Length: 86
Picture (cartoon, helix red, strand yellow):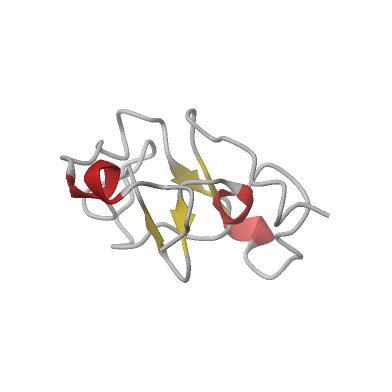
């Protein structure tokens, strides 16, 4: 878990993917995720495929269900992780 996310925050009920308009951008699945507006570069992203505040379960904004928070995903609550962005 990333050190800047408190234990209390990760134990709270997570938001639904549809609520935060999460979607996976398949065309960026095999690109360098260190650049751009991707979950990989968000302070809430927990490698390899989850989020501290968004549930990995349920359908995304487009109605697709992958069961993960993908590094190549995006959502409306994205916050930059300066340690990851190049």
